[in-house]
Image (cartoon, rainbow, N blue to C red; front, side):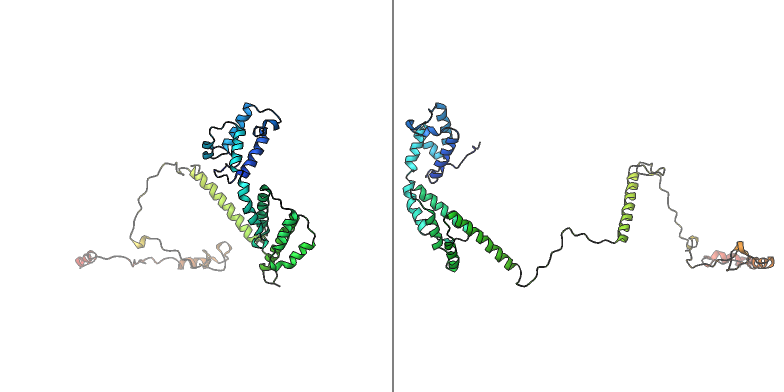
Length: 332
């Protein structure tokens, strides 16, 4: 089961003792337990057994396993605090030479951005302050002015003449100038000098439409909706015609008649246009109901259209066999 931590654990080597000690004091003060690490003469309230137990739980929860094993026999938070202080409080003596070296070799021109330089200055300043040495705003301003890049000598003089008295004000002005320079370079590299910007098409621009195609689309959508309703009725077996749909009784399949005789097949219709004939007189310029022909003309027309009495139709597709000719030979 994992334990939720309020701040990082104390390292065995004590590398983070400075931060850890500050965090532990803040949490003890927030819970009203800060008097447990003070001497009895400096305590504002009497320390109870419950207060010592809560303080020990907070201490051990934010210590590494090796540190817990080493101080397992210690039951008093005041004794544990003094033991850790005696063991790791010499970090001031160890860190002081390193902090001085970092401060002497600090240069503004070695950093890519103002933010990185400001973070390093704050780290060195806090470390020197912990070791007992103080840095004033004048020291920080002079360090920044004297380590400007040589190409920005004119800019460095302008900052000096602005009479800035706080390091925070100088950092604010540097950040503002850095942002303006970045915007200037971005605009300069966006397109060649003198070229005009081409406006991009509007994302929500409305396109023109042809009303003729709109009506066609509406007609298609209405037909599709009617077909879909019809198909749903058919699938549900609700068709208006009897014995239809998937639930209707299956009808027996009728055998298909085959006839190889081409003569019995219906002839293809002649698509050629036919003249409008009068069935009374045969004229083409009027109909039968408006015919004014005489009775003699009508009789002559019908007499000429009658088929011949002894006319014999010849079937060109008739098939003759030897038996048909044998009957005639017997008669002879």
